[in-house]
Image 1: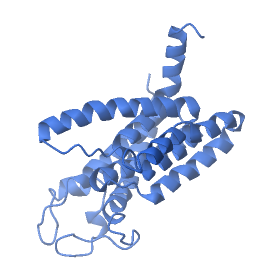
Image 2: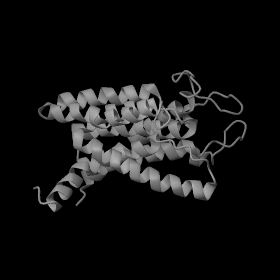
Image 3: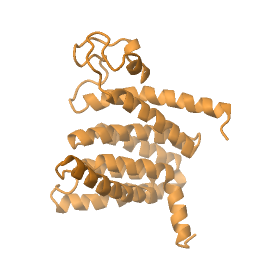
Image 4: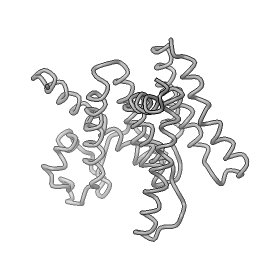
Amino acid sequence: MLTQLTIFLYIVIFLYGIVIGSFLNVLIFRIPKKENIVQSSHCMNCGRKLGWRDMVPVFSYIILRGRCRQCGARISIQYPLIEALNGVLYVVVFMAGGFTFSSVLYCLMTSALIVIAVIDERTYQIPVSQNLFLGLLGIIMTVYDFRHILSHIIGAVIVSLFLYGLYYFSSGKAIGGGDIKLMAYAGLLLGAKNIIFAFILACILGSVIHTIRMKVSKRNNLLALGPYLSAGIFIAALWGSRFWTWYLGMMGIY
């Protein structure tokens, strides 16, 4: 049962998440254009520098009814959606994993995965900076969970090596280099069993969802794998251990 303190902490986590989500929008818009991510924000239409009242995550969009205060141009719905999504997922992470250091790392991982998923969906490229950030989180997790260091090391190669084989024998046509690095760094973070689970989930999600999208929208068959890998990694990070406990128990191994 949720106590008042727990509810208060979840509210704080959500608010913190939407603030980080505001920065994620900056990364999503500016990284593909190779723009400076620390310069002040401005209206995409009139160029007016935005004040603090225009940049309160989620709430400014609602108050301004999705329009620029100066010129009245429509503001992309992506802004509040990414902010709210990041806040909600932060709460989900802590609800699933408790108030632990691992949950903090998984929240940071979640933010990086959101950026990767959106940019890869739009450009078919995974940002190097976000992959490196996941690698840093993987190193921190490996040190923190040192007694399972072998699992983390194996996790870094067990899926990525398979993907590299696909990349090599297809001359880069079957898989992208960014996907290989993503699974290597995420594997270091999650460990061997969970990165395998993440990859299996990603394959299932990608094959089902992308097939439906092609039929509905008449899109070409070019697949951005990053969003599905990101979803698989997120789910495996939170519930992978429970899945393996259930699966191995069902198989009679436990």
